[in-house]
Length: 247
Image 1 (cartoon, rainbow, N blue to C red):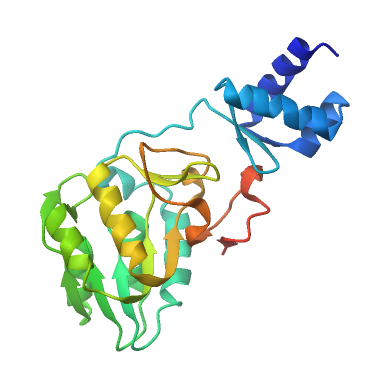
Image 2 (cartoon, rainbow, N blue to C red):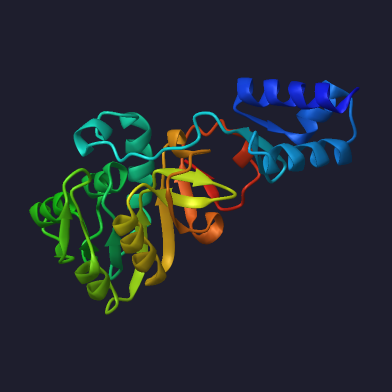
């Protein structure tokens, strides 16, 4: 098969399926593994697809550059978020010192908390209110208030985080990419996430399946820096990842 035709067929498959493995391309195109991998490297360098471990994913629809209003995000994938949050809540134990990131999935953790003596730090006004109503000792970072996510950001928040040592941290993300890592649209919010993760012994990302194979402008952590808790994941590009837990 001519290389130009093979490129066209690879791109047709990737754009139709959104993600594909090297083995699947070998079977469809009746081509060797080395040839497929070489083709994917070429197409990735030309920006026509995104090469990932064991395959490739489509560029179209991958980029997510805007933070939706929190009221909108609260109505999306609610069942998946509840399953993820309930499992995450079970990981919090007595005497844990927990960082709870702003986000619609991390917020739901509070609904399922059964632990008695954990202490929380958060950058979210919503989280702080809910924790207080349930009787938990909690602290909120100081700094600039970001209305779309109702999170606290900026230099004061970063300075506050420098004094804490968390046993566990639970974080949201806008995008998950094996190549570009964990990302979010806002540079100030990314800085807070990054700093908080650095202060945690155990780090968890809570993400419904819509966040996978998405890239936002600012990367705040490498892909394998945290355990990613999700449910109903169908994206084949992530099926072999040791740091992804489906619940």
